Each structure stands twice: as structure tokens, then as C-alpha cells.
Length: 181
Image (tube, rainbow, N blue to C red; front, side, top):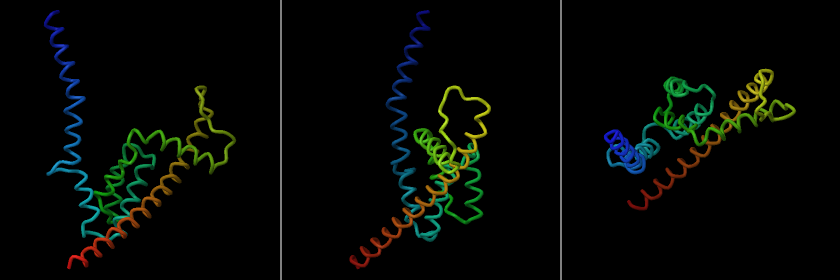
């Protein structure tokens, strides 16, 4: 019993240290590290000379679109396949497919359901604990239509914003390059 208690305490302390120190430190190194810095790779992909501005912006919009479309578990596979077919930047698409991360999922689900409610024009939103099979078809239809509309709208918005941002940044880079020379 004494050894079991000591081992349990040791495991608890080591787990707490790993949870509060090591895992966040490893995550920060993954994002900002010298060799494998994800943010550096993202920046490098966006500002690389490979691909046109339109292609990169389409990759951004398509990645957001695929992140919202309700084909859970298959979003990345479909995104890779379609980005290959449409000749989009695969790195950008794959990074933005992960738009539907757990903190954003409730907002995506509610937004999709609400937009579907507005489009279909049903009488009321159903948020109840007394949810039966008779409501499933209506709710599912609202959600699916709303998620496709939200995916299209957000994909288009992110496409426009990324195109304007990259166009502006390229103009600033060219302008600064002329000033230096």
C-alpha cells in the first residue's frame, strides 16, 4: 500500500509537470522553433514565389470551405484530393481545413443551424432536451443547408481578405525593394 501510494503521487506530480510545463513548451517550440516552426512555414508558403496570388487566395478560401463542410473525418482527405485536382497550394489548404477546431465548433454548428433556419424559414429554432425522432429530419435539413451556405460565405470572405492582404503585402515589398535599390 505504501509503494502504491508513492508511485501514485509520483505519477500525479510528473503528469502535472508535463501538463503545465512540458506540453505547452513543446507546443511553443513547434510553433516558433528554429527548424520546424509552423508559423515560419506558413509565412514562407504565403510569401513564396510559387503560385499566383489568385491560387494562394483560392487555397485559403477552399481550406476554410472544407473546414466547415460537414463531412467530419473526411475533410482532410477530400481537401487533399480536391486541392491536387484544382492545383491549389496543398499546405495552405491543409492548414486551413483545421479551421473547425474544438473552441470554434459550437459557433460553427450554431451558425450553420441558424443560417439554415433563416434560409428554410421554419417556424422556430429547436433547442430542447425533449428532442424526438420527428424533429431530426427538420433539424438535420436546416443544419446541412446552413453549413453549406456558411462554408461558401466564409470561404469567399477569407478568399477576398487573403487576396487583398497578399496583394497589398506584395505591393509593399516591391515598393520597399525599389527604395532600397
